[in-house]
Image 1 (cartoon, rainbow, N blue to C red):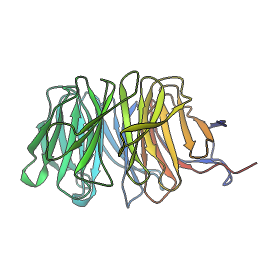
Image 2: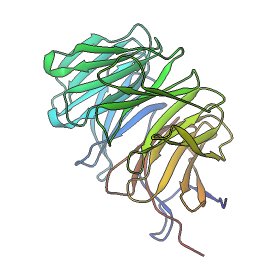
Image 3: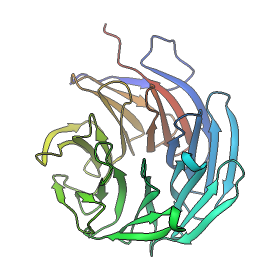
Image 4: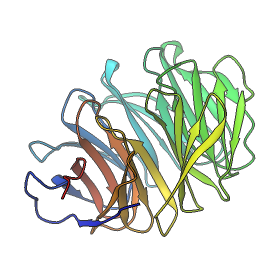
Length: 312
């Protein structure tokens, strides 16, 4: 596999693989999300804050001090002009992101909340926690808890709805497994095993028939969901893999790690590393139909344009 390193510093030329568009310096960023239509990036911080920035104009749109404990996950619910956030105080908070009106605030779990994901069609949000549970919430019924999903025996680090079948979702856990679930059952449909240590992150890849995962064993795995097999293991990071995402426009995977690098992996075996200059990478988000990628680091949020390398 061919690999090279890119230092993310001053803006690069248009021929470079990676262009830096935006930097917002802050305390450690635990999650990022991109608005699907507006040039906004939502960042949640270890210090309990949320920021919404316009990455085109470099303007701060909103700043919210939600709590004094880490906010590990936050997502836009764009159809309602809301954002939803989960924190170490076990609370789920919902705000109108234009007016900052509090829509709802409630205790969602009995331990830290690690991940939230928003259903693309139905009025549902899934939450995952260190209490080893996944919960389904319906906001049209005043955020009633519709279902509790049990099966993991360690912290649940991430949940994500399938883009192919929105009645299905996947979860990653420090128990070393990935589980596939159906909304109609509180028990997993299948379990993917192969990581030697805890699994921190996952992402559906391609047409939704594949899944990408990253773990504390420093590797990324690509899974065939139909046959429940590991197709490939990608090695290159020197520390825990904390976050993965699928590139929106080209067949590539982007990963972040505690080794201070973001790596881009292409389907032809080529790859390159992006040296952040901002510490460890904790979160990634990609905007559909573009080359834009948001990255949350120890020292803030950056927007990158990630392209396929030009052939030498």
